[in-house]
Length: 114
Length: 114
Image 1 (cartoon, rainbow over the protein chains, first blue to last red):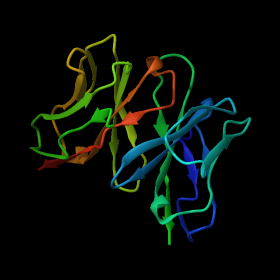
Image 2: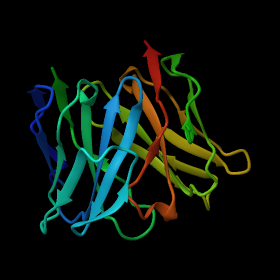
Image 3: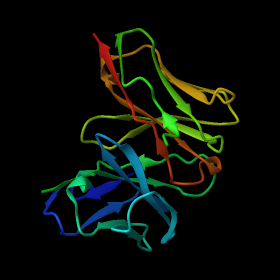
Image 4: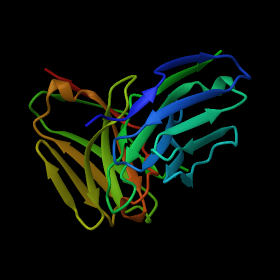
């Protein structure tokens, strides 16, 4: 069974640009969550999508958005990039229903904003 | 407001001995807890989880203990191996784990010396 796939692995963007990151969850998983990891803030929850709907949202500005498609693949978008958006962006997939379902993470996308 | 805390940034143990990683939480709504292992520039790897209805869960060399009254959990690794050297994250969720939203601690770097 294939794991969680994130593309691209590395990205360099300029301040003010926008970026789109992609995540393909494990087959059969309907929940996709996104996290930002920075040295100072650790792993922080961005948002969760389940069955194409945003189910949970973290405390990030509106420049961070996402969506989920009918095949459960998800994208996140960051507009008007700032230097502080440089981070490792991680996607996690889980069944999304039932109790105590573990989340499995992809390798992440390393975004550098210059 | 750090709802999940790992107060020890680092831990060093000798190969073959026990590693004990600790985690405290403040939100009494948390009812599902997970431990992840992470190498640099990779996504976290799920290790073991525990529901709040239990006080212990064991999987091979890994055992997680939960003390709800103290809002404290710990991960025991016995025996420790050099390959266990990584950053360990404690994570918590509410709603019996039926959500992709995980709150992470800041991580503890474990070094196992041969």
